[in-house]
Length: 391
Image (cartoon, rainbow, N blue to C red):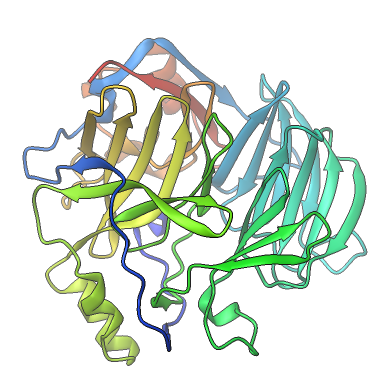
């Protein structure tokens, strides 16, 4: 059985130092995260099945996807990145395969790594990031190659802006001639560095494979979601402004300062996260128009999903996965890998888990339940588009 999505991917641990005093942040709109034992168990209880759809992605020799890390929808096309970054794939809105423009390999238009992708909606282009080669590669919306640019950064996430780009680098990827491990780099369209932002202490190497560290709201503002932090920032020229402040109303919440000052020994750091299973925001943030979705980690497992309604200020926190896995069918709706015009997008791929999901007890539309039951390991993931009832 595939349990890899449940585990915190531990790559290696490198504490990043900082020679200047840590900047203090305050303010931001409050998002309550209630991780108490009374948190609802099943996401299906809050899904609006009157406005719901699913798309089975076509599988063939050119399109064989393990699991989806990130999905974007634009102009009648669905763009997905494979969880193990084997490629970026393009499908039409009905799931028919169009092209696999980005793939790993040593050829002239291939990639050493595929870290992130974005859709530039103004230029109508697909852009793919390779951190190992330090490049951005541009395609048209159908996946035809346009050009490849060298950016001179070892960035692992990026976002487009009106002036250029925002790049996120892990501390161990920061330029060696810098005295500070800056994580955010703002450039113009020619990749000339305009600003270096966010040089907070971080324990790097805790490789949480989130879809992105960035999210763009309907007004075009870019949000930045650092791991462990109680803040989600809006990135403006010259500064980071707390846009949201996460308030935990229950549980053993991780003291980030305590973690930052921990012994650099890998086992000691791992013990900090595993003993007592502290709660912390793992940086998984999905912007969805009038709502946000984010994940809270408990120890080493993504345990809670929080939905936040911007207009009312209300939040809904549910178990993503209980410790005994009794609500395992939540993997149909969690994790959220993207959004589209008010719909959250999740991706189901693990046919071996169907027996654990207790589908006979599920309050799901019969056609959807049958689609899940018929899923096999030879199939590509089932993309699920859902909205929530009022909460």
